[in-house]
Length: 85
Image (cartoon, rainbow, N blue to C red):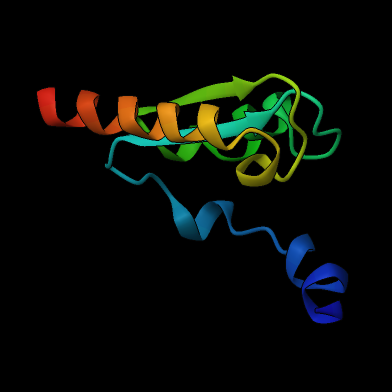
């Protein structure tokens, strides 16, 4: 996917995206040097007024492979919270 790496990943869609009014769970790996917690808070969280960031320890960018049980628990908790809202 060289097109994504060379061009798509560098596009700035902030103005076009605006704010998205759904409960959002943004999951970041504690060891993800490029797209970790700080990047998720800066790049994604501002678009979700009802969003939260969770950081997964001992994981980088491939959380479903690195910490599948922790990710599943975070998703289940997110669904429970959304159902209660």
